Length: 143
Image 1 (cartoon, rainbow, N blue to C red):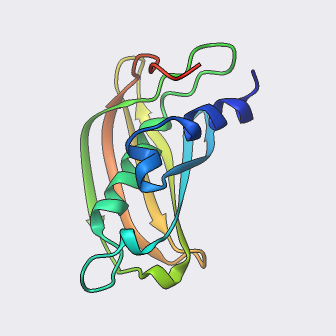
Image 2 (image 1 turned 120 degrees about the horizontal axis):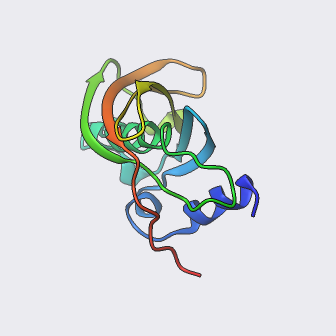
């Protein structure tokens, strides 16, 4: 199974990411990226994208940065130990979509560190985060 198929498996899994439209777009050693196509469900009463979406996107992207294992090793997304998010600007549903990109910044075998940002399609910075993670166990995915 190639890495494209592995992204497909993760993106087709039911649960929080699917419910919120969080799709993995890139996953490699030290890097993770996600995209969310914005809908009316992503905005707050002020019609701004909810900060919880930014945080969720960053959590997923950062956790992936230190968890990559090439096929045929099992998929092992990271587990969050600590996540600090900074909200820098607002986005609206009119942006169309948002992306989060993250990079591993350090650590070892049992714990790793990562940092990332949420960006609009024109690369306007919306939020940043840094965190501490550990490699997880392979998730139970539908066959």
